[in-house]
Image (cartoon, rainbow, N blue to C red; front, top):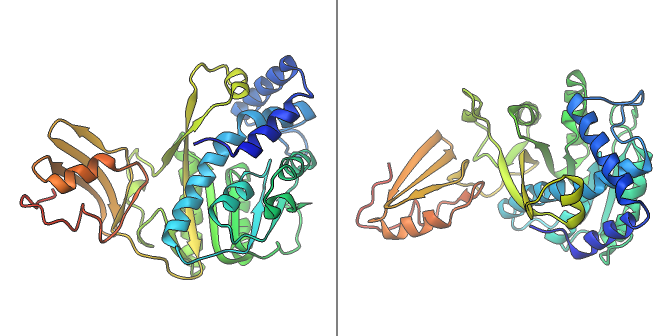
Length: 342
């Protein structure tokens, strides 16, 4: 996945105003601060204009890719849904409005909320470079999910990405309730998940939303207990994103891509199209066998598909990590002579 051309060009235009050395130093400071869990007295990770630009340059492509992936799965499960309004809570540089506008041409307006004035400024600047009115004319405003007691604006689609994990654990339930209360149709929560911590945050949010009467749209096939919470495994997915030159420099990496690992949940007011299950690990195809881990309504299943099952085997080779398996999928609805799926 690559950033939309307008967004990439807008970021590069902003980078022209700062020296490469200054950006590199700012990026390193952010990495160290993030690893240490350090914030300033106002709880802000980003504490200077250079750090704001560095964050946009090296993190926005990755967060955009994860958010786009989660929103895409929502669009697949809600194919008739055409959201007109978006609220992006804790927007940072504003990746969700760009992703949503690509997936739903129906989007008419967006409200971007954040407590950090520097993030709001870069989000506004980037949004104004878009040719889509819903992005270009986005209402960017200050809002602190912890301190501001006013109700959040209402949106058909509400997104909070890489937000809950940055909040104190005792305050998350109240924030989830506020986000759900502002949701007319669907709420999408995304967290980074290189370890189980991000998944734990999403899992707790999922349970709270179910208690509030939400229908789980994705990635789960229903509202049952998550089988991935057992043992050392956790439910997460990966989206490969192409690195820009600035990203490679700021991350001190040589690869042209990186894989953003994330966990997410999509909750809705109404039920979505049901699925048989979802692929929860990268399928493993070796020789005459394909092994696929699928999370379904009955829990985790390990499917072993033989090459002699021609239709299923061809399908298994094309599966991707995170893909939904529907009732009419050849994997579960094929007339292969060798019809067993272990």
